[in-house]
Length: 113
Length: 115
Image (cartoon, rainbow over all chains, first blue to last red; front, side, top):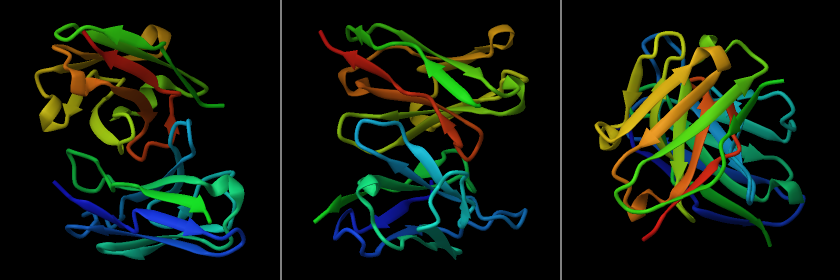
């Protein structure tokens, strides 16, 4: 199974400041079709997860442009350019290149300092 | 708009079974795989498996093989996930999610296993 490792696991951030979450996979996530199936999800307290970014860097409809995804191969990053109060929650990366199973990172808890 | 509406919370005794439903609307049900993901209290997300609503084909994470069944009823655009032989560590919120990139999620169904 592909192991997804996120860091940090806890991220206190000052409002208006940037935040960055790293996600590393135990093997390359480049699929034989040339795509990289690495996605990011946000889970606000008490809510279902919501997809933010798909295939590394594609922002979902309605997702603020302060969220961006980047990376390649085994190293990926989710960045929030300026953290707002509504960004509090847990962020997960997930790969669907090598399956089964689909695998998630452990989650990174973003909180306001 | 795409919606996935799940059945309500359940309380079960160890050894029992539970069946959770996920009713889809706003898109063609048979065009997208349906995945199931669970989240134990205070824990992360765990992928369980998928069903192809068009063919009924399924695929499971190894730890759930033999204990979990996924079915669907295309006439009512509903997917089902059943867990048998419930244990206390099956206590979790169970989510359905559409498509291989999990683009839309249900609201979750809390299953509590307790004697």
